[in-house]
Image (cartoon, rainbow, N blue to C red; front, side, top):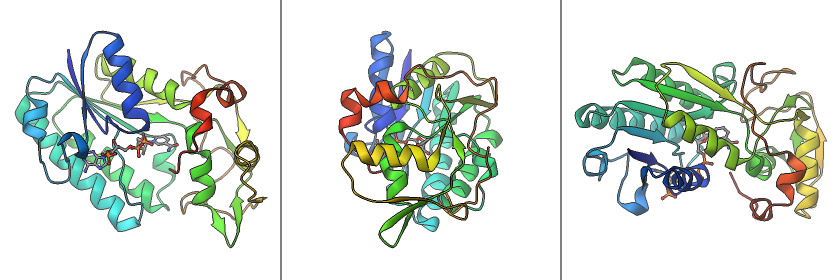
Length: 255
Ligand SMILES: NC(=O)c1ccc[n+]([C@@H]2O[C@H](COP(=O)([O-])OP(=O)(O)OC[C@H]3O[C@@H](n4cnc5c(N)ncnc54)[C@H](OP(=O)(O)O)[C@@H]3O)[C@@H](O)[C@H]2O)c1
């Protein structure tokens, strides 16, 4: 089965392409540096020829409110339109657990807009809501700076390894479209400030992490359970302490 992975060179995309190839699928990584640009439409008609499934794990290079909205609206519109012409049977997109509860954030308004376009299109779809990636913990610190300190709310979250996200998205991509949202999460709950503090310590990053109930996550106010998946969400198997011993944990990912 030909499966095109939009953002196939990124953190999740590159792992997903490898997983799909291991299972003998014809997985194609599509991104600007492979000649496919969803913002301009460049290369889309060619790469989608003969594709049964498209998985969109792209992300905006710029997280400014206006730029990220333009990215997800324009790229999703282009993608869905080229998919309809190519006869694609399943559109899979990766989004974030709690997206619909985070509309105070410009980034999440853009993800809401992306999901709305997918739901309104004629292509059968599955939207995967994942929790925060372990690889994103340093990036979370970077976007939560007040002066020289990291301010984070001491609320619960249930982060997961990017490798487990890629495995789950791969399984969903080769299954039937659900025409709805599937949540996935990590095996353990933590307090956001606590885990980011632990992660920065492992990176020997000297920044102090302050537990601040008024601090926002990407611009959105959180309550205790905003970031948690539902009780029925399938959980990744990699625990945080195990992940820390893996090569993936040695490379701090900015975002
Ligand atoms: N961070 C988290 O904790 C988290 C949690 C749940 C869900 N998510 C979602 O997961 C998704 C993937 O995140 P990620 O961290 O894997 O992203 P990433 O590593 O930043 O990769 C982004 C990918 O998008 C590609 N891309 C950028 N502009 C493009 C364009 N115009 N046309 C086609 N491809 C383009 C990039 O290609 P180049 O490298 O060539 O620019 C790259 O392959 C995002 O949608 C995000 O919302 C993230």
